[in-house]
Length: 139
Image (cartoon, rainbow, N blue to C red; front, side):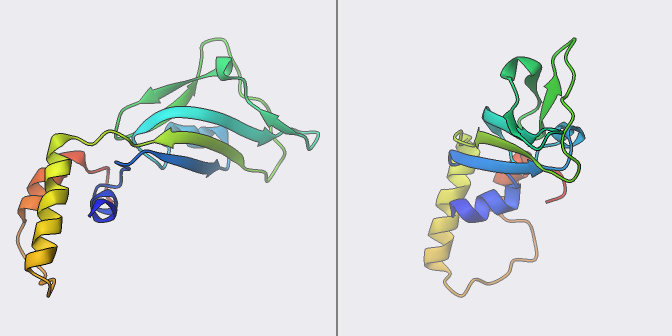
């Protein structure tokens, strides 16, 4: 049920250690995992080919629950990275389950038990109504 709800909403509800690879610091405008709880590290390969970890004093977490981002703090600059290397963001995501999402998961479990044939509904269901406000973008 949780997997179905997370896929439907495009968000994590169980706390999870995420590893996100970005091609450039510009990708930090829209992180692929949400909601963002904490950044563990931001690792990159510098111009000399050495692995580096970005100091947390350089960036701050921003955006919203649905669209988390990482931005430079005032007066800071992103380091230069080796061409073609990825920037790896390690973070903790999820962990907060809104009451309506928990209720939707219980309904999903109950419906799955009682309607085992998994008939496809053509109209919106109670699940849709409970989850629509927790859905990210065009998932």
